Length: 233
Image (cartoon, rainbow, N blue to C red; front, side, top):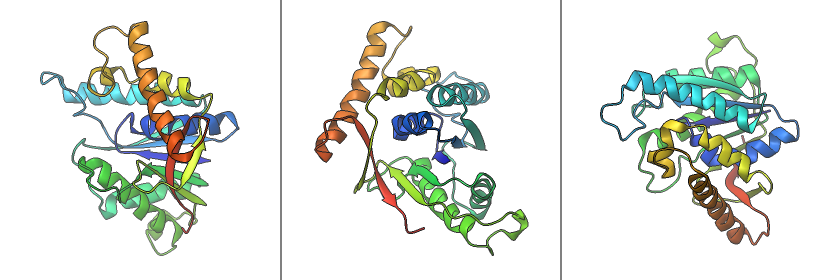
């Protein structure tokens, strides 16, 4: 079982979508945890934030089920742009880790230099800190759940990646999943108006280019995603 923790809807797909699709195809149960409601994810100043948050929740479920038909999606529901790493957040995330008991957790790398978006930084800290809380029995005993220690943590967008996951054959699924985030087409995918064949091809080219750059760094022939791997949990 794998748990991917993203700050916003669509962060998981960008960070590890190909990896999740591959693992799901091999029988791995996939869980998403989205920490904020994505209510500020637009360039339209007239967009209703509450409506956008609801739209993005629906898009996330649709996208997750594109990568993995049996994916389970969880939402923490914090306000976009206001995510903080406090005992409350760590308790809620640690509870989920103890409840579903993932073998692998994937998330933002909080150690990345010059990371601008505060939600991405704090999502990474929440993920790391919650793993510690979930494994040690005297953290949050009110959970009344057995402690759980995952086998591995994979952090995407790492400055010092040391783990390569081939995603050969799964890039199109990653693209298809991203396209489900229709509210984000213009702001994060460069797609304006109707999703034409040319627009799809442009997004596919962007994703393929990113995967190709990873392959070059690793001297691999196949497409892939890279992570910082931590097993000393």
